Length: 337
Image (cartoon, rainbow, N blue to C red):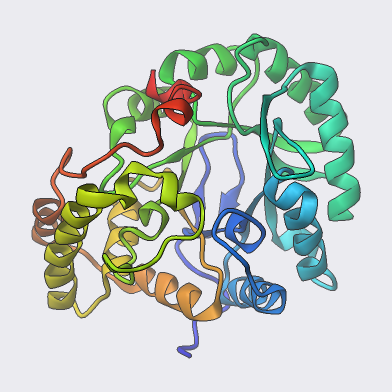
C-alpha cells in the first residue's frame, strides 16, 4: 500500500461552529448492516488504517446492526487517543430484533435515552457530533434540537448535526441552536441539495458531510450489470433493470475521464464532491483497506476547471436513471420535499 502522511491536509471545518476534521471521513454503516456480511477483523483494520492515514471523522449510527456498529467502533478505538477522533452518531431510527424498520422517534426523552446507551456502547463520555438520522414528523424539530442543546450544555455532546432535512427545517433548527453540519447524500448523480439546501446551509454557517459520494457503489467503477445483488440495493431503482444499464453507461464515460487523469472512477467521483467547497467533507463507506486506499487517493488529485468540466460532462446533472430510494422510502426524506 501507498504510505500516506500521518495527517491528511488541509483540514476542513464543519461550518462556522463545528469541529475541524480531515478532508475525508469514514462512514462505518456497511461494516454492520445493509451491504451483506462484513469481515469484523478487516473492518477494524480498515478503521485503524484510516486513523493512521490521518482520517479523524468516523460516522456511525446506533441503529446500524442494532448496536453492532457502535460496539465495533469501541473496539477499534481501544488504545487510541480519543481526543484525536471526531465521532459522529446518528440516532432516532427504530429497529426490531429481526432488523425491521419501525419509524423514527426523536422526542426529547427518547433523544436523551438514545445518547445514554450510545455513550455506554462506545465507552466514551461524549459524542463529538450527535444527530437525528431522519426528521420525526410527530415532533417539531425545535423540540428535538432543544433537547440536544441541553446535552451540549451538560457536556455529553460537543456539536449538533442534522441529517436529510430540507432548507426550511434547517433554518428552524438553527434558530434554536447552532448546527455544525448537515449530513446528506451528495454525489455526481445526487445533486438535489444544490438548489436550496446547500445555499441555506452556507447562509447559516452549516457544514456538509456528504454521504453516498459513490452512490452506494454505483460510481465505484467496480459494479457490473451481471452482478447479483443480495443486499438492500436490490430494492433501489438505480440498481435495477434498464436503469442500471443506463447508469453503468454513464460510469464508463466517467471511466474514460478518470483514466485520462491517471485515476479511478471512484477517485474522480470523490474528488468532484470535495471540489464543491471547503465546507463539504465527503464520507466514504470503505469496508476494506484496499477500498480505503483507493478513496484516499482522491485527495491526491488536483483537478483543474477543465478537468471538472469533463467530469460533469460525463455525468451531467439529471442524467442518472432512477431515484435514490423507492417511493416509500423517498416519502420519509424531508430533504426531498
